[in-house]
Image 1: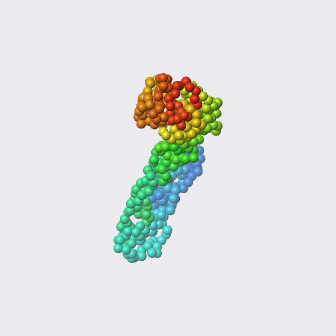
Image 2: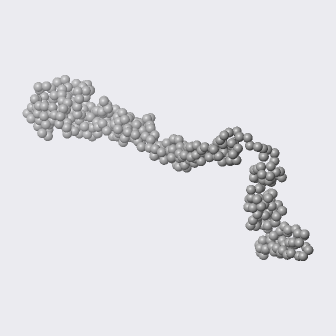
Image 3: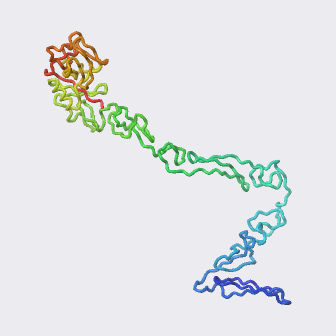
Length: 406
């Protein structure tokens, strides 16, 4: 029998013609007719660099070294690895584990090499260890392995899964969710275990409720907690009439937080002070009641309203024992005494009555007497030890002004 050696080159763009004929007395004759070498160029294609490829009849990715050809690219059914030792059996190739079956499964030239066919000795009655070993010698591997529940990820990325046994190794099927950019929403968007980290704005404590906070007392949160604001420029968080937008008053305080006190706020005879978180100004120059009220208004204040015994004692202590106007009058309606805020505090004359539980400090049994019907303005009277009297409004007196608390 004669067999022509297989030609090792194929040309792109041409077909190898395989002729087979049976000739009497000669056996089977194979002839390959190749019109041109792979080194030649196809019509207009240019030269190419040929590589060797091997026939892979069983499709296991490994070819037969005896069935090789050269080509610019792998023809159908050919691969670039020629290390298969049985190209008719897909379960035989170099990466297959050797088995006890009288076959060279891994193509290393040895059949059932030492130890492969050793008798199985049971090490357990159940095969629940994931080790790729037939521990109970029943012909199966790790068949009794029990999966367990697992968890992974934190926050919105949290997930659950189970363990699996594969080829003697335990794997975890849990897959955590994908982290997102962190937002200030009470959720751990980036799944790092911390909620709203790095995205919370800062708020500042506002004790006096003037909407300006203390820069030294801060909290970070998505929304402002009660008693906190977003602005941190208050210079005195105990006084509501002190903040950057406040009107400067004659009260010996830096009301507008510009670093200066009372600038342009005090009339020539005015002197200010703060007591019980309320600003006051004393006018020492004598004026009638209406003129005193105007000076107070122009300074951002009003004639003082005396609402408690403590406030009465405080102001009288600063009066230098001088008759001093305060803000009560019945000039609109005789016997109807109101503060300049509009609140009525007394009805009638000497024997009148307090209205609405308001504080009063008339000289008992004497005031208000409304002599000749012209005594319509309230004064802290030195002759009464500071108790109130009603005087004609055109008399010149010192005065107390009271500022707004906001």
